[in-house]
Image (cartoon, rainbow, N blue to C red; front, top):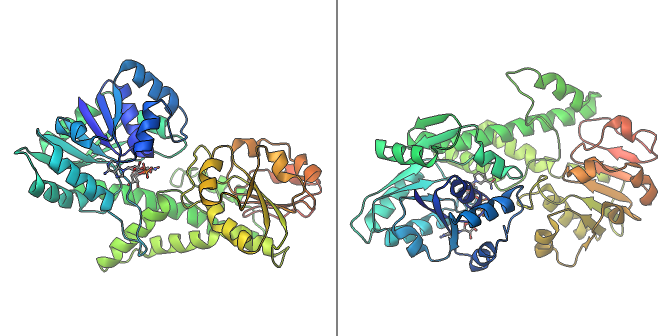
Length: 435
Ligand SMILES: NC(=O)c1ccc[n+]([C@@H]2O[C@H](COP(=O)([O-])OP(=O)(O)OC[C@H]3O[C@@H](n4cnc5c(N)ncnc54)[C@H](O)[C@@H]3O)[C@@H](O)[C@H]2O)c1
C-alpha cells in the first residue's frame, strides 16, 4: 500500500520504517528540512535501538523515502498516518496547532480518496473535528475519512514495540476504514480491537494515565517506606507477584518524565475538568510526580544547606535509558535548581549530552566517562538507570569522590552492595546507608 507519514519524530519515523520493512511503500514527511536531509543521508537522527539498521534495510529495499514536499507525498497516498507532536499548553490542554496544520496541508494536497489515520495522542473528539476541517477545505473532489489508531510504543524499545505490538486499536466509523487499517497491519501479529473513534482516543489517554498513576502510587508508598522502615524493593516484589497488580511499572524512583505521561495526564485532567467531571486520581498523580522530581534535592538538603561551590556529579540526563529524549526529565527539574545555587556540575550521559548541550551549552562540564564525572565530587546524583551505571564498580564512588554522598533516584544498586564501602548512599524507599 502507498502510505505517507506526517512527522518523523519517535512515532512517525519508527512507524514509517516498520511499515516499510513490511513491504509497504512509505514516504515520511517533515517540515524540518535539516531532519529530512539527515534521514536521507542514512542518519536516524534520534537514538532508538535497531532503528539505524531498519532504515538501512528499507533503503536497500527501496521502500522508504523522506521529503519536505508534502504535496507530492500526500496527493496519491492510499493512507496518511499523522504522527506530529501534540505538546501541552500552559493550562494543560493540548496544543493542536501541528495537527491542524497537517490537516490543512492534506486538504490542499490529496487528489484521490484516502484514509487519514491519527497516530498522535489527541483529545477525545479530535478525529471528528479534523475530519470536518479537512472535508470543508478539500481542493479536489475526493473523499477522505479519519481513523484513530493510537500508538503505544515506548521510547527505548520503540522499534521492537512497533514490530511486535501487544494490541492494535482501530478507531473507525466505517468498514472502509477498518479494511484499509487491517491491510496496513496484515503482517503484524497482535490482537486487533475495533472500536469507535472516541473510544480509541480515550484508550490511549486512559492507558498512559493509568501507568502514570501506578508510578506515582509506588513513589508515594516508597516515601512512606522510608518513614516507616519498610523497603520498597521488598514491598513491590511482594505486590508484583499478584497477577491483578503485575510487576511492571512498580519501580520507585524520582518521578516519571518523557514526552507522554506528563502531558497526557495534564491533558486528560484538563479535559475532565471542562466536562465538569474532574479526574481526582489523575490530579493526584500529577501532583505527586511534580514533588517526586525534586525528591533528590530535598534529600541533598539533609546534608547541605545550599549547593554553592559544591562539586556535583550527575549520572544520567535522559528521562529513561535507551533514549536521547530529555523532555520532562527529572534532571531538568533538579539541575536548574543546583545551578541557581552556583553548584559546580559535571555530567555524563551516553546519548543525552548532545540534546542537553542545546539547553546548557557551557554551564555544565560534560564528561566522557563515569569515572571522570565522579573525580573530586562531593555529591553524585543519579537520574537515569543506564546499564553502564547499574553495572559499574561501586568502589569507584569512594575511590574518586571527595566526600562520597550518592543520591540514587533510580535504585540502581542493591543495598547489600553499598554497605561497608565508605560512601553515604541514599536511594528511594529504602534505608539510608551512612558512610
Ligand atoms: N514519543 C513517544 O514515546 C510516543 C508514544 C506514543 C504516542 N506518542 C504521541 O505521538 C505524537 C508524536 O510524538 P513524537 O514523540 O513522535 O513527536 P516528536 O516531537 O518527536 O516529532 C514530531 C515531528 O513532527 C514534525 N512536524 C510538525 N509539523 C509537521 C507537519 N505539518 N508536517 C510534517 N511533520 C511535522 C516535527 O518537525 C517533528 O519532527 C504525540 O502526539 C505523542 O503524544 C508519542
